[in-house]
Image (cartoon, rainbow, N blue to C red):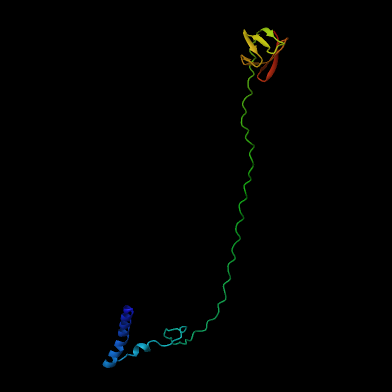
Length: 158
C-alpha cells in the first residue's frame, strides 16, 4: 500500500511540477512546430508543379510505307533417302554332328524272363539301364537286347 502511494506521489510530481515552474518562469511555447503539421490530401502530389510550355511543332506529313520485299520461298527439302532393308543375317549353322559308328558289342550270355534280366556284354554283366561303351541298354529279351545309341534304337542278337 505504501508503495502505491509512493508511486502516485512520484507520478504527480513529474506531471505537474513542470507546469507550475513554467507559470513562474513564463515559459514560451514555440508554435512553429505545430504549423508544420497541416492537414493535406495524401493523394495529391507534393512535387512542385511545372509550368506547361506550349511549343509549336512543325506539321508532319505521313510518309507512305515502303513496300516490303516478298521473301523467296524456301528451297524444297532434299529427297528422303530410300532405306532398303538388307536381307537378314543368318548366323552360320554348325555342321550336323558326325554320326559315329556304333561300337562293337559282343553278347556272350542272356538271362531273361525274370524280375531282373541281365546280359553278358563284352565280358561284363549288365542290367537294363546300364551304359557300356556309350551305348545304353533299354531291354533284354530271349532273342537279343535293345540298345540306344545317339537317339537310334537298335536290336543286337547274340
